[in-house]
Image (cartoon, rainbow, N blue to C red; front, side, top):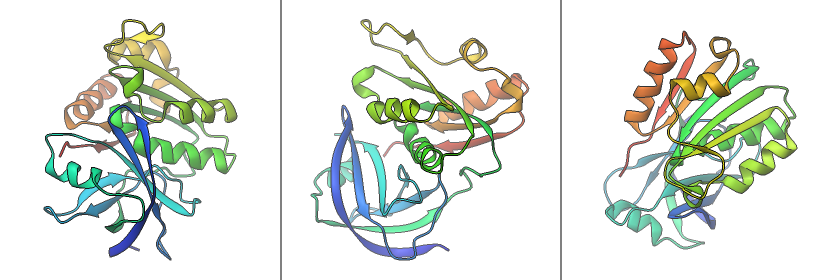
Length: 229
């Protein structure tokens, strides 16, 4: 059931990467959603903007994260919010969601596109599900890698989670470097065509990877485009 125009209080604001903040909100009564779905957050400027939930449905709070852009008046108003302030929330929305019947899945995330996958990984770990997950996560550098510590903790706790990072502009990084492409996917992921694939990030990235996966013979693809604002 979609609930609209709910006044929700900000419980906590965290920095989860350079220029990236997480907002933890009070969870409205009877607010039920599935891992991977999103909500709309409304401020005084313009209409509501969509944000994927980083929280798991079992948590007693809601959480979303975003990059704070100096060029965005909307983001600056959000950045000015303090713990205890209220936001207007509507949701949940979206067909981009994990289904319990999926037992072999892969995620491709770019930057803040990691947000819905945090919620899914929390959910799988809390429920101690045997779903196998490969996450391919691309960022400019380690400082810009949102939720890095939590991802490492989740993969340590849940041995079914395999996280593969790559950095596009981090000379000192000793791990994978460069962008995710067809050869990167083939190198790091087995049984490519047997998995359900999720892609989240900027529209150009999502469209590009959807094409790459189709070229690799993948049929089951779910997408979530993150537009800047």
